[in-house]
Image 1 (cartoon, helix red, strand yellow):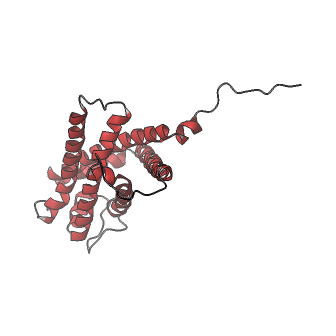
Image 2 (cartoon, one colour; image 1 turned 60 degrees about the horizontal axis):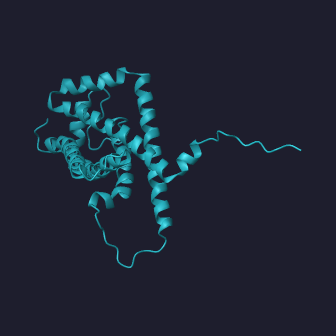
Image 3 (cartoon, rainbow, N blue to C red; image 1 turned 135 degrees about the vertical axis):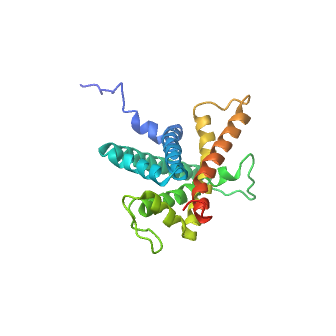
Length: 230
């Protein structure tokens, strides 16, 4: 008669991913990586205010990275997929946990950023896809201007001179700001930095970081439309 053998070290990965805390941890980790990309991308884009040569040199440097650039892109794509999947699954789990709608829904201790977190993400994702097709691939470059593979400065200026492109960009960056405000604060909570003693300071930090990033991004199309960047 043989006794059943119990594996003392079961595979913990599925249970971690299936747990609510595991999904929140994945959201926090991938969100942190994507946040670093957002900051780095902004610093690179702001070089448009220095000179045409400086922005084009930055673009040339990125292309010269070769395989490393594709590795970074691959990591970012994986982070986006995991972030979106974890977000959707958590939203569905929360909805299943509360199958009956409230007779009167009230937003208690909830900001606008909190309430738009789930639907702002897909809109930002759609913007990213459009943005890549416009400024990286050049397949959706608007207007009569032709896309230049070597002159990023020209592509940005000619693209943002089309008012609806700038409007779409500005609106998406404002949504990104709301998303970042909530995401940064949630990241603080995920790592345990939500003590009442400094909760207010952390919320203010998340708010101002989101505002500064948003202003940095939207300053580019605004200056192009105003002809301050030519």
